[in-house]
Length: 330
Image 1 (cartoon, rainbow, N blue to C red):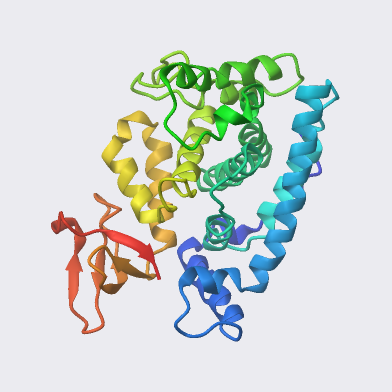
Image 2: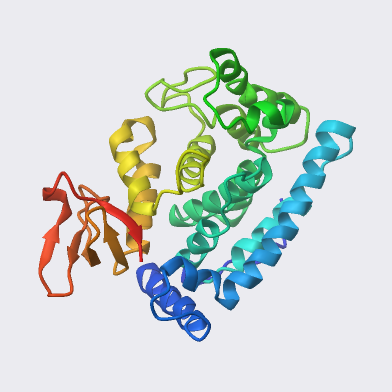
């Protein structure tokens, strides 16, 4: 990888919870002059100068990924992995805090997110997880490239099937499940780190053996592939679909908890979920019964169900209320 890589800001690893709150305030302050005080959290983010900049740069990286992927897969042109890595790294570094990064990604959504947008998102999220795990710079680059290339095998499947709005037939789903092998076959002859190739092949494997295409267990699963797997699922759940709106971060955390953390390597999934929950601590939220509250404390044993405080200063522990959950950020 690039030996003269740009050093990432120390603020990303130190004082992260404070940085998240500062990032939230900065985005809201930047937007407050252009949107009414009643605007939603998402509206404030999308009206900020940070989002406008990110949107432009994001589009540039997407265009580069599309050109490189399609040139390699359909025209046998060389693929410039260093270009894609450098552009993705620069986009990542444009976000000053964890909160800013995830706010940008959550608001870049559309119901027809492409393979390229998903791949870029997974790369950015994977790099953030790598930072939380205190990976070295070269490891972060390898992990980022693994995220970029993890779904390249989907280019071997027709858009008609990939973008089908209805439920897949059994035959179609079996074809979809082949995309990890298609991706590995595309990458196996390239001079790439083995982790990058394994991430393409194994990002749908699960530690309990329920994944595909090989049904690997924790002992056989590649570490980088397991990190990419978490980023892959998170991005898919926070994306809009034809049959549902995007899920908010706490709904995604709840889904991970419901599905069983045993599917993922404990060190990776617990690190990811605890940091995601911490990123949105102190946020205003809407509960599924319509009430508005502030998150005041996390429950470490049930991260999706924090303690919230209402306008009258009363508090409620959501972990003790089975019928209540956080519906959205406000």
